[in-house]
Image (cartoon, one colour):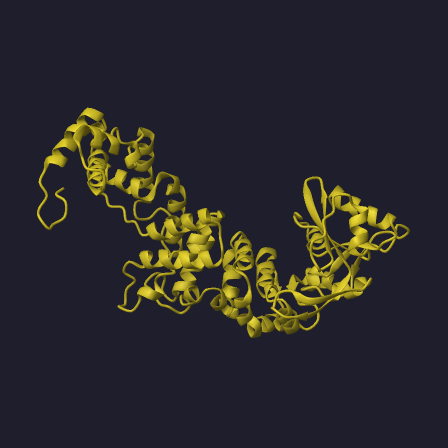
Length: 449
């Protein structure tokens, strides 16, 4: 237990209040797992807690006071019971009870209804287990406190949290709780994107994300989060005999390295296939998938940088290396997919290979990676900003009219330099630009190359 947590408990005890560490803290200690979140519950009313801690902040109606210690915030909540849930997320009314028993009864799962502490400084701190959470820890079981369906109808986030806990802890969800999840799965649609995204992020960070993803699909929760992903279930494809598209996706996610952008891209890399399956093939599914992935990630309110990175990976994951690629082709590929995305793109493609029953470096990935490394070491021109000339040079020295013509000429110069990097010299590029500017264009047609 961190010194800061013990200090908060001691302060509350010394002031004559019952105080306990509750939830994930005691659970993780008993499991021998690193503990990130420590929540505390107390008989002290919020105003009393605020008075005891100079750096405390109370800005809600749920009895939760934020106490800052050693650069971190710890939530200290008054014992309470919850009533009249109106939005499938938070209670409309709470009642401060002074009772640890009532407080533990409102919690989600038995393994989170454990409490360690004391009612006063005269008592020796001890573990309180009123719902056989210890038994469920030993059985490696996720079980709701009280009636499971009621727990999930009160707070629909508990539905996804149950699956996340089963995934990250390697536990099973006991049958009545699992059946209640199936019955209440549509309620997940009422949750905010941010809440779903956080639980999904934790599932994807697990050792075997497929455990949780499979549970999401089997219980109907996946359909409430993303009908597009749920459409992969039972969709046939010619990968591994007997496996549908969803099974391929699960294998791909498990094979991906534990980086959020890569695992999220692995989850979404074939999201466009159901929409492109009408003709019996999945032609250009990566293009449709990029749009669908962006729509989903924006609904989940992921950071813009994360969304852009994942969409980029989905859009470009279908590259196909050929032995006849020249150095210019390698540079064009590198310019298209960007050097900063190469590591993640190759990681995704390797995972996709594994998910398809292939060798990780199938389709010449190792050879292409070596050639890309050599090109990057040589410092190639990979975008127009690295050209030895710019738009101002074309306008000032050649008299090119500002506008689309400048972009056309710079684009053609860039193509030339990608094919032959030695051309990236201002006099040589200006000579080529002059020729391009003076070349007549076919009337009514596209610019001459």
